[in-house]
Length: 429
Ligand code: GLU
Image 1: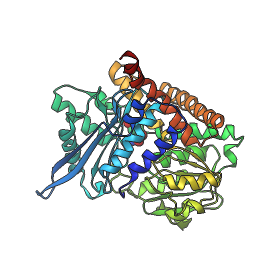
Image 2: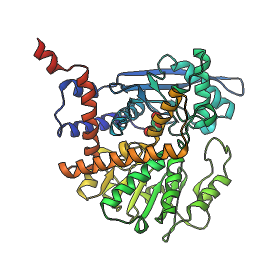
Image 3: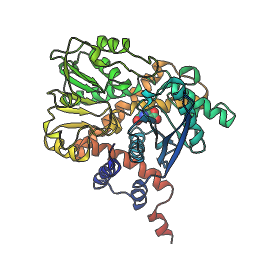
């Protein structure tokens, strides 16, 4: 991704700061990442050659608890992107009232070009490089774009080897047999689903009347598509990195998923098949999908897809940000003018980190919950915080994103003030 994502992200903070009175300490703190680690991860490739991959881990803020956030494997991973993602995690954890700060990691790599054994060596090598920087009480990684359960398992194992003790709470999104939580795989989609339900109820809209387009058919996008499909929504279009499919009277999502799966090359690793394997539908590009006339547009892939260049052509009534950072600041101003509501990433996709928190709790107490317990707790948190954000937006007459940031800032301010602020020390002097 091009440089400048972080500056764009920080502008959102500055906009929110116009609506809340915070101590200068909190404001100052939130403008900078706490620490940024850059590492070189050496990998012995299958052909015997040694290759170095650049890796990062950013701890943005840990005022509310240990840093929390995923690890991304993608050719576009850069320090700027990882810092922005860590910044968003800080606010996401605060919106959901999780006792965590924000962190993120990444490796600049095309994981689809690696063999399974190379991928394992890369994942273990990354943990070798960042082991002193992470920990159950310091910074807890998880999956993100192109990382998954299997990779989290390798990473937890490597960390445990280094520390010479089994440490499941160092990482979340693990396989069940290594201390993973039931319900983690579907958590991001379920969280978004609850947020959509609450939002549509407030708008007096029945899910059955909604026409939906979803960009991104990975873990979150595909699960959410199926949940909405099962509830009677008409999913007119879905896409993945290779392109999209469109059907005016609605796609049969279980069939699309099945066909995509059937063509996977690395079944357990990546959804390497494409939604394009579904032959009976019109093809559309990812760009065309974003401009469809639908009720809900759900970007569920990467950041920066709705920009000032296409925002004017967006016809959706509501955007649900399941990806992190899909809408740029400049685009948002255009959307607001057009009256398009945007349910922001730091709320809409927070289900994943919420169940990561449950996983961490279960690891630390050594007692595991049923799938129903996890689902209930997730629903309760998502519904409560979504209702809070919707009410705050109405009360203050601001966008949902601003409301979510304001909601998070109050919690961040409390944590910062509890440590002693400028005001406190001035008064004592
Ligand atoms: N990568 C996910 C996110 O962006 C999950 C992070 C986590 O579970 O810690 O929210």
